[in-house]
Length: 272
Image 1 (spheres, rainbow, N blue to C red):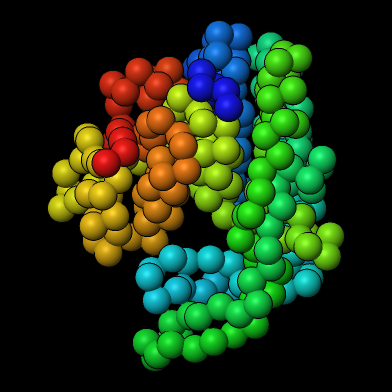
Image 2 (tube, helix red, strand yellow):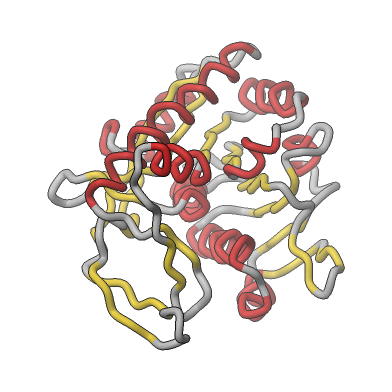
């Protein structure tokens, strides 16, 4: 358990929309002072590359309102190529450029993220009816190799993790980036989990919610849109698993990471 470590999840929208340049200063300061683990998204890039390759992407919605990519064999191969390849390495290079000794990893490397493949998915179809479909190559994380992350941090490295897990049959599995961040933060007992996106935090009735307890957050889930529901659910999961505090904030503002860690911006979610 590394109580002083900060885990940051950079959403694909924040990456695509252009992280504020001061993010990298913040990241270097935190890596030097506390230890930092970076998780990234990149779903839009996966969709763009898949479309260029002629592979139409399908998205499904669960009865609880969670939207996800339907991941068949061809899609998981593209997903792996883009997430663990281009997106991960571009972010590693950017961090290196700003003085961080970043190491790019997927969940397969060192069995960092072990997951169980979902046998079936319950979805809501176009007519609003529940349907059961094959689970494809989507996983639920069961284990995080915290020793690998801890050793890397102790040696002065900043792990940069792509959200791809290894299954029980050593297959690639698509796992949600927010949920990966939650499980990593929980497993490390992180001091802070910061989820950076392209909005300032959680909004209810057009008003920014500054503070939430985990139980309040759970009650709000049904009021949230597809873009925020997974982030709030991941916040609850992180806190219940052992992370200390979670901040959901914008990556597009000046000094987005340090201000989130200081809890002067965004929505702060605490246990209780």
